[in-house]
Length: 279
Ligand code: DO4
Ligand code: MG
Image (cartoon, rainbow, N blue to C red; front, top):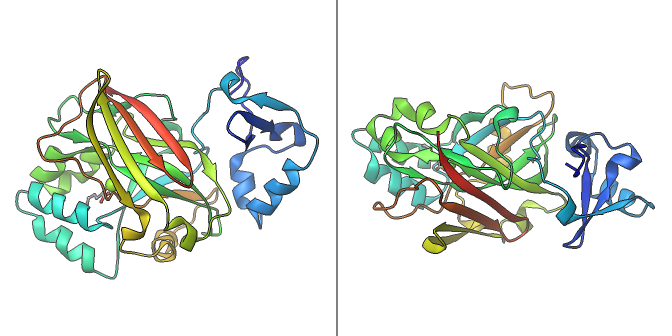
């Protein structure tokens, strides 16, 4: 969004500038993801003589425009182990789904509720144990093809999920519980994306409270498998976004507090930064 509140579609040019694709008639990120070859389409647009704007002069909105947001779970060993430990009586559910042919996939957010880079994410007022879940996001088009990638945060209330697995929607879906940003990266194959590193840093009053990282390659399931299940018996007329699960879980003594800053970096994409607010 520009300084005068106009919503426009931009293509990154280096680290400091954006090419104004709206000037070329591009109406949405969704339309780019719907094209047959988003990378080729953007390369062609990048070669046109279009106006540019400094990155510092715009506010990045979430790249989720009209897509339903879903999330896969227990796709990394670390997530399975942490959840089995926190769980009261449903520990075996995680073990079973980790090894089952069908992945866990759950609804996470309506598009208009997704938080952008720079906006606060929420921790529930009635939860005592809250963590961010840094996850690679598959941006799929209406044909179910993976057309791009983004950085996601599947905010979770561990005490609510741990008390009873039937409380999962409350642990996962609440005000400001999902962030996606800072933009969409196109053109990477699954093989390339699996070489990326996801890292998480949580700061409180300038002090680092937690740092961790995981290779995307540690994900148990293939992206095509997740995309196939996501689109089974489903119709997504505008495409969809799928968070692919977390492989980083802070130690059991850690919970987020209001005012914390969460930075999630994925090496092939960029950094999603959000502060924390109690909701
Ligand atoms: O099984 C509950 C949620 C799992 C999840 O969100 C994850 O593994 O990232
Ligand atoms: Mg998750």
